[in-house]
Picture 1 (cartoon, one colour):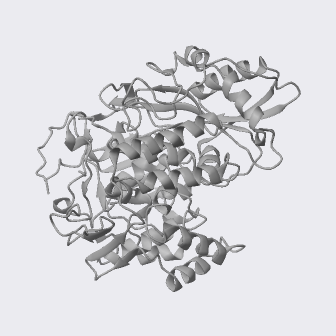
Picture 2: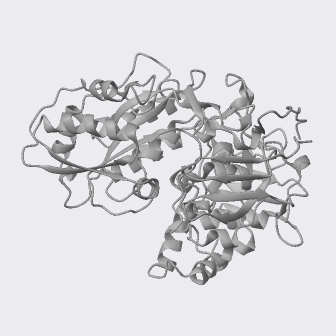
Picture 3: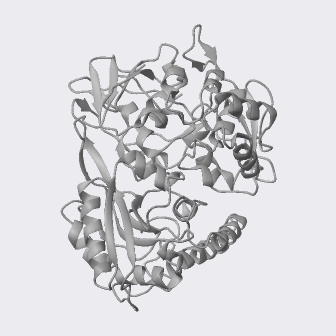
Length: 522
């Protein structure tokens, strides 16, 4: 049973209409997807962040996590058989059952060149044949990216070798190689099931809301002109089949101007990378020159940046590594990496103009100002541009142009254990203008290939991180505890969820003044 519905819930979220499509699955829409979209696997909202229950994914649409004990994981440790829960439905009229064919369609839509979800590179390197499928997909719709029929025709005529349905209730996902984080990868929203109705819209298209179908406790009721979205209860959702979510509100509204949650530093979980610089080394850009990249990396003093932003980000500290403390690959305080001394530039950037792009927030502006001060000290002329969430996400995850040289961003892993790739591979993805791409492709493939050997894995990912720092492919600036939600206006029982960046789990909130009810696990 769930708490009785009462009142509305208002949450802040800067959304672009295309972000609502699970195939696009960028962080701006995390809260919407948590409420409307069920995935194969997911994470519980646990008050005690130190326990294993807060870390391990469990079956969401899947009836169980495949393992060698339940015959869901083959002896090769690459083949996963997933059985879906019965009686999970889409909000169609009449309600239609979610099938394994919907899951296959979800994987295919995530490969669209118009989707470019935040986690796609992790999946392309993991699922058998998925990268080649994505490349064929891009070729098939080239020049016709806005034609939904062209997208549908390709998906109907081609398939991902490593994802196929056995019947309506069961499917197989085959990986290129064994992976200890395989279930975490399959928990990513971008490979959530997609109904046939989603064939009528280009993945990540601006008109997705008109075609959207939901599996979670809420569904999309409409969009606001100010960039908000209103959710209403989904009549097809059955709480007895959902181990992760509750429904306690009559409606949920997400918009940029909603009251912000009260937050506090969270000390019980691994730290996150609050700020880093991603140089753009595309043809014709100044930072294609390795010497200038190294000069940028050595000139920016993370200590000065931390001082400048202390009032905006309590608890942050200067970062010298890409992987923050407490995460896989950074458990040992005696780092095996050869780290440069901070703030010790060699050379001059005299006469070189750079464009630095940062998110349009007060904290990011403070970081950018400190970075500009450091770079000006060695002769660089830096133009600063603040961009909104959608434009910043396009630069980070998509192919949003090349008219910049430094992108200021932060990064947080979606899962807490064995998350080397969730930082290093995610920040070194195959985006336009990335630094020394072929070098990192080889190093990352090598690291992924030794996943079953913990010692070799640590050494291989350390080599990736060393090269990232040496080649200034990522310039780490600040790390620290994530800002965890501890109070949400109008709601009680706030439980931060790590996979949501320690935002309050909207599917575990209750109206202020209501009585909490115990939830019986499914």
